[in-house]
Length: 360
Image (tube, rainbow, N blue to C red):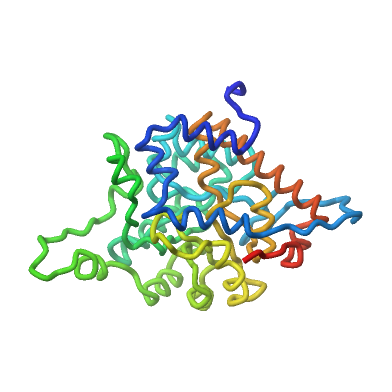
């Protein structure tokens, strides 16, 4: 398999785009609408410059990070993304093996095509489970409990997609899940049963809004869940403050990789104000637009404790399965440590807003 490994992260992205069918590329790599937010996520990183410092004593340096009660060898977390068997036969198990090989914390998608118990058995570092709110409080709590029984240590509740975004690329390509691809961990979950729309009824507001959680539901879940919960999809400082006040373990600054609301603010741009709103001690993660190790450095400088990466891992899986994903994670980690050294930062605590210049 080593002959399939590529020399750079850019090469993996190019090869993945060539390897995936137009329909799969639309699902895994494209964004919502005109892809304004998808582009803005990466453009935001390009508008942040690193200010190097030299001749500092960097002996004993480390990229170790603490996230919750976990000490990680680097601040790099595999983000949740669905139906990984469409990328490689092993699916989520391949990603779990890759994450374990590189000591990376992995978050399993609620829409995993592989049973959570099987992924946990193959991935000692797959310790977080992502979930969406189910149709009821009880159904959501039951899913949380199952994840706890499977050995997960924290939950990531994604709150920014009560409805799917308008994904032009998927519509135009005719993307549909192939036979056999399904969210196997949700098969026992109750599904809403909608009657035909009446005259003047809205499919969104009259049918969906009543099963979408509000803050009092989140507060209830945080009080009753068997595991700590991070809220993913936070872009407004006030929402971040509400999440921490409600008892969240942390917040994840995210616009769903530009896949839900097109023209939403870029995650990196939202990050500094959210850090200011929750204070220095709250756990703040971010995702969206990270393609290189120096991007991780920039995110930490602007307030993140760690980052989640999705599409680079997709690139690795699409090109060379578990080995490709592991190699991508290794390249990201190496690039990040190189950025730390060249910026004169011995530990993550040395990475601060003073290390970067904002060009926005």
